[in-house]
Image (cartoon, rainbow, N blue to C red; front, side, top):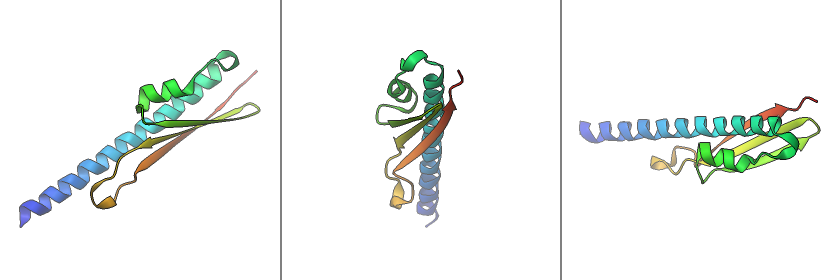
Length: 100
């Protein structure tokens, strides 16, 4: 009776740790992509490459540019967790400002 309960709790803890790790990587990918967009001369940066390198090939990126502000939003799949309790995907967002 105790062993199945311990197994379920361990599975939930491991799944939660996975979701947190993916979330941190997704946020880091957004931050680095926004930084690359800010420091790259005349839009030479490719944020998709940066996000793929950090968050994995299944991550997606969306870039919005408004005057001197660049907003990078990344979406990273986590995968279904046990009992559907974890998010299927997490998002990260970072904003960079260009100074002339």
